[in-house]
Image (cartoon, rainbow, N blue to C red; front, side, top):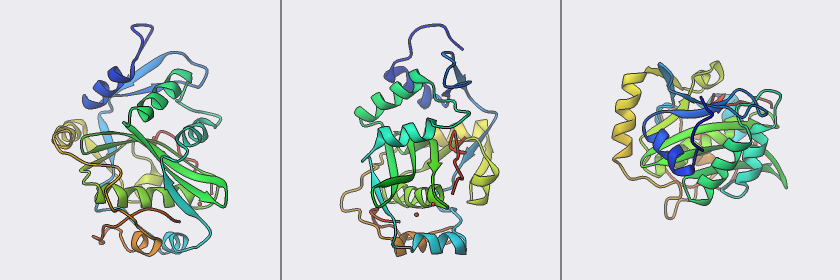
Length: 236
């Protein structure tokens, strides 16, 4: 908890490297808590579950996907709910990390409307999923499908969801003990990865064919989603 020294972007990155992340009790609460769960939610990158209904949504032609096009809008949408762990200081910190190239967003659009998205922090080959949102049916699921395909193409080894929720579990996320999480984190931090792989240009049919049993890698620029408005990548 705080008060204490001001949290800087560099301090926040060091915290992620140690396996802890920040949360506030609410948007109005100035106190930031450091969290290191005894059991951690992770997405095995080869284990994302694409149901028949999600596959149909992925193959629709009424949406498109971008990355880092509207990070602030994605962050704001994730914080715009009755209960949120994103206070003003955390909001500003993630904007700073994005400006430094350490935080990224993936957005789902319908025409000019931002209907879903996810954002997170990158260190080495670890992606720390922070939060996601959905304004249409399946929009956050579409974002996750495109994100996981991108992470695989970019050489990532760990997708940290922080907590495991029933929604994430239904898509293939699992829970592991703290010690195992730190082992995976240490290994991922020693590996290189990129959120923007050169030449990466996926398409919906490629994304929809890559699930728990898929192995394709390709590139991201198209895809749609209801309120599975998930927080702290609910991703927590």
